[in-house]
Length: 485
Image (cartoon, rainbow, N blue to C red):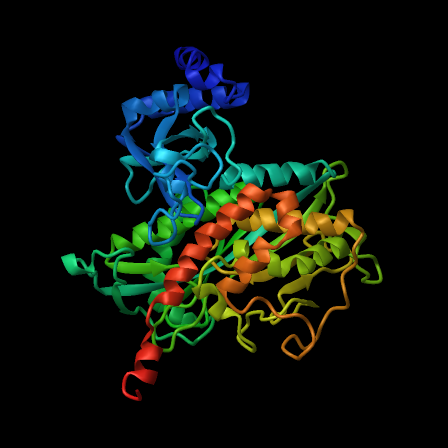
């Protein structure tokens, strides 16, 4: 291992100060492990602005080079919308985005050895996650992983840590037509045709789980083989709809875990002729929307206690009250980070176990924030039910930390909890992506906490998607007007 250590220490990344001593030791140990393994290829990946993994694949013998020099990738990967179109004018003198990204030049991929995983569905292969950086090693203002690390550091400066638990809903269908004809190779590609694995609408029924157990087992075993802290596997409300839950962890660990989980589910299912989707509301007959419920508790770094635990009389702690107040205050302007797709806003409907307005309630699944706090209960927490499962986890968690912390710092107090979450009263969540874009663009809070460069960047990316959606002629329009006029 000393040979690997010396190699890394004399490399470009170490000389630039981009690898600390702990990372160098972990990288050297990893190189020794890989050298003695049967791993043949390694996918060197990063999470882009959409929470999609992108990168390159190297042979195992080239792994030392990414810890000495990093790996280059086109900067345009960070400038695309969900159709994979580059939405910034990279061939002009001013591409309109910070970081000198004109000309489609390279960025640097900085590897994190702690994210290395051998892939149980492709055991000759592994992956490792990276932080995308400028070629100099400087941090981008919109790099997802670095943004979350910064938010966690701000919270730690107030002697607090956030602990999160995940509930993730998604669909797994049988693939009927993969749409591989040349005519289907559009941007984006034409959606595959599918049918259900099970009829569904039998929430948590044992017989339905029995029908789905073969694929449930494959996904669960893959999670466990990768070290993902899976806790439960459930039959959700809709046909072919699943839910996996995960034990609590820190935000960065669980953001990485979410990236791993989504990629694993899609790849494992595709290899079996199935189609897994984390799209919020698939356009399938009798389908149901999927949500992402984020459990959150706060731990005092000095005392090691959960400060979400209420007083003996049930009164919220100051920290819990402030955190809830901050999440509510900034909920609407956060939606571009919690609900980043056109489709996600079609989940915000009343009486559907999904929120449609900004409020909290005690153990109320219709409210945006569900309080699960009892005196003396060390597992006291809140559950934010606002997000869609397509959200970029790094951006999502960042929004929760910054909004919640603002509520604590400003001394805000949570309003009274609601009992009837779908009655008139509280402000509604944005009705569509365009509204969310306007709210983020005009957010003095996010321009102060995340910076103008990020706000301008993310609103530009999402506006490009909205414009394509808005200008497309829909089936509704064709049915409404084609025969009438």
